[in-house]
Length: 446
Length: 175
Ligand SMILES: Cc1cc2nc3c(=O)[nH]c(=O)nc-3n(C[C@H](O)[C@H](O)[C@H](O)COP(=O)(O)O)c2cc1C
Ligand code: SF4
Ligand code: FES
Image (tube, rainbow over all chains, first blue to last red; front, top):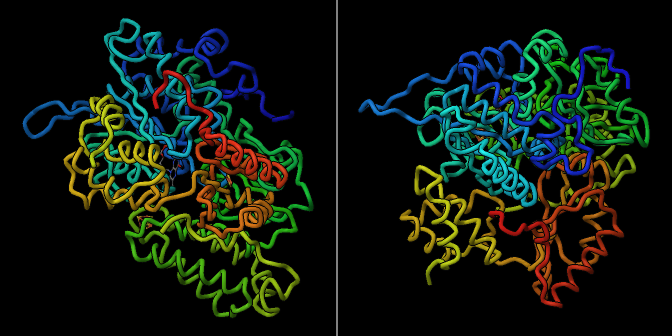
């Protein structure tokens, strides 16, 4: 494999194909496991935060927010109105549900201790003695593997009281979700963690002020935590150097859809989308038509736009986003309106319904796309879609509404002729295609 | 009726980990769902009583999350992912095949009460698409032949009185 990057080495996945890699013994023997924790506990919390800042690690959950900066927002000594010290919570977002994304699940099953070690270091850095791992409830096996990993870390004294004789205490608890995509949004997650409906909160206040159970909290993604031990152990410089300016380190890119070798690839961010497709064995079943580069919410790119590099800033410049690292490849047999409808149906079902623009907008978009597929669409519909999207983006409590407009707008803008063909020729039937049976399947619940 | 001792014990065992009683609501409902395969109004009342929460709170949470089934289901919950990557890789064929084999539409349960056919959102198995779940268990890279044999296997296991689709439980590990 040619990465054109002399600084690159895998940070999270060097051994994920080896048998037994998920065990604490393997991690300690072969990957210097928990050595970074030992080192971090000898550093001052502010030094750890500084190291992470300088590494240019950015959040891997979707928004790409600089991790060190997020950690530095945590108040140093929060007290309540009576002067009592408030606890601070560290929360791991393992609700992975963004269509096209499957990297956190790999970390859970193959290298859970890396994430755990990252969280303990994070706890030390922000001055928290308690962390929660919020995991999507469908992950029955993964939750058991993670619980086993936590039990093992406790048994070795990496969790619990007076960790490695440092005087630092840290507990980690798993919290199971119960099936709701929106709980991946960090404030919805916090509500869910409190036993409430997973409805996003208005910000401010931000979680660093009022987070879980009303206490200052910091939420990071699984992969974000999993990168931390390397940064501490090898130093920020080594990590930062692997990526372009402002995008340090590696990313776990999840390649799926029409490629010959789908899977999770740990890569530096100086590769183009075309390079990554080539690494994943090339397009299968036809020629490249479109790519969704950062999970379902990221605007699509046409084949001719896939020379773009995959760091946060280059993708943003290309009008899309690095998002969650889910790279979905579509070949030229795919009807883009139909593929987009598949996503809109999902969003329609998953909107939490608090904001009318999002609740109604996602419903209307799905209905309009369906009408176009069924042969009842009009040219005006295409302009109307743009109008609905303009009413949604940036107008709501959370970024879900923006996420819906990603695929809806980009598909119409970039593949307008396919929509026009469906409108003039009478829908999918009119062009000799039959609609998917899975489209009859509506939401999974009322 | 009251909540089972088993569920109470499980929840009492994790109570110290959470700062509020309400935080225990989702874990308790998950236990109910696990033991009874659905969450009835009676269950919700019991849960409310156990956690000192009004029924309205319990109900609004139970109705929010898809894993809480508010009506009885088949013994085997067959959930096929039809989201983008699975759809691109033939989820459609699986749905058609399951409908034909079971003779039910989406969301329906077979007359013998054994199977419910459902759709599930992206399972984070997009690299091994198409994916489906049988109760707790994941199956990936599934084709029609495998789907049919999974259905047959579940059928046999049910008739033999075995637990279906909960193969990843580990001795001594919660949950
Ligand atoms: C609709 C929506 C869904 C999200 N889903 C996830 C998710 O499944 N996992 C995740 O880590 N972040 C998700 N996020 C991003 C989180 O809100 C948050 O930015 C992230 O967990 C912060 O961690 P990071 O800084 O390490 O990326 C989602 C955001 C939105 C708006
Ligand atoms: S934007 Fe949508 S998902 Fe987000 S809070 Fe509003 S209604 Fe809920
Ligand atoms: S799209 Fe089916 S598992 Fe992700």
